[in-house]
Image (cartoon, rainbow, N blue to C red; front, side, top):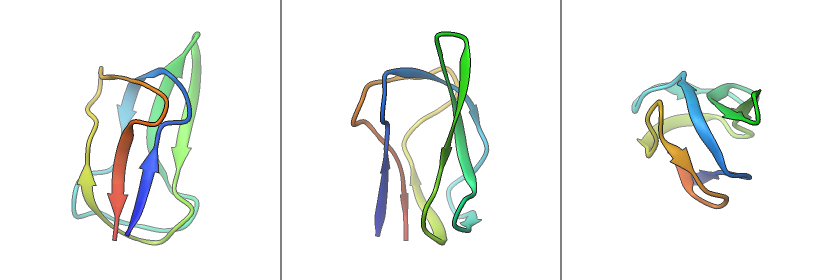
Length: 70
């Protein structure tokens, strides 16, 4: 089980995966927006999205849980 956490305060601009989706190393899970910049959140592990804890429009804080991959 791998937890993907936010590295900065940002808004969730786009969610590209859903629970149950398979992902590979390097896949983009979501795109954050901060100070008019788009920041992709990538996975470094292959697996299946077991939990997705954000939705488009959410404001997340540094350390917040984004997703869990099993």
